[in-house]
Image 1 (cartoon, rainbow, N blue to C red):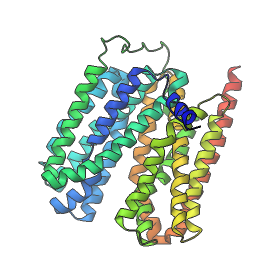
Image 2 (cartoon, one colour):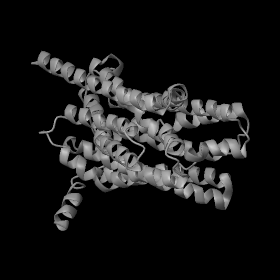
Image 3 (cartoon, rainbow, N blue to C red):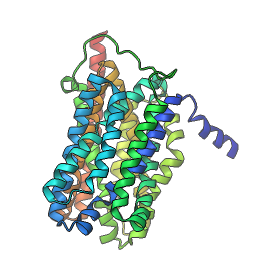
Image 4 (cartoon, rainbow, N blue to C red):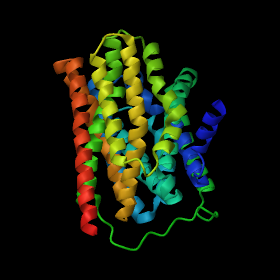
Length: 407
């Protein structure tokens, strides 16, 4: 039995191209190296002496830079191709991470953070285009899942390493290592995925009219659902930890262990889970609707009891929802981009939606809790997720109508 489980787990990784594995390695190095981000607020307050209000504006500049970077990345990828955009985004953002430690004024930090994210997040739409280039259509969802595993593992390793670096070398060491790892990822990228190497050749784009995602009704409905999901999902990184502390009196260590349950389960079972559902007999719309419903349950269950186990079940519902939701959201976006011959701009809008959610999600959650308390806020978040399910029903009907008109 255990041998069969192991074989099933191993088989879920089969069939992925070597380029996808290299992209995952580069993404892991890049994300593990992004250690400044989790400690940025602490650095701004403790080392530079900024107020909470100042930090709020700097984080707004962070979000705006991310939105603009995603948009710019799509435009540049369309013009120059993903290869150049990914390399220069990694290399220049590495240099900018190193330089950010020498900025000490409030205005300078706002400008520096904005331009850092402008350059760094141009990488994201280009990465999706690279995945679409190097993976087979039937392996698309699993290829995205492998990239997600690299991102999750990188985000798990980064903060732990970052804390140790701060103790040993202060925040200055963090900026230097962040920058060096980005530059190292850029050099590794140009070495491993050199366009002249066999198998790394970039596919020629299909000749035809490129449709704008901003004029695609199907995609805009999809983005509407995505915004609602992103808005609510981000509460697990801002307001939910506060709820654990304020209402359940959990320590920082206990909160950390509870949050790490998410990463552990994802690392353990996401790939085989996605491999099982990446089959034509399963409707993508149904998977998206059910996984979003699991997200909603993860909020509603928090109001059921003060028992600690409710928090564990809430985290597990959210984690299973995340494992099914995000890979298939990515896959739908890439399928739509391919259909309309415009990978770069479609994936740029996809990544921009999460950046927009970052700008409004954290602050709105805080304001709702301040005005109505945790219980009402969790009902509101669950309600928004149920609304996003209606978007998926609408999406399915519009796609069905579109397909019937083509017959």
